[in-house]
Length: 112
Image (cartoon, rainbow, N blue to C red):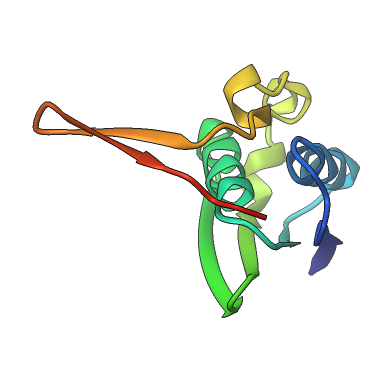
């Protein structure tokens, strides 16, 4: 397991650090990124999903979270483009998430 400590890091560093860890892999592994805010958690979950990877969030404390990304061996089989893929701008955003639910908009604001 590779652990990425992004506690206290401002956006977009948690995603950038995780992407760097992913690029350094040559075989199946697990990347655990530690963060201290929900926006970083959501960005990391979207980052993993965009690359076809399974990820889960763990709450470690009041302001401590881990995002665990499983990187299977199949990820490296003819999949170099996924590793080097650019990180979409929305994953680097520190803006609150806006969720549309039955034509209602809900803004989620996280203070740090």
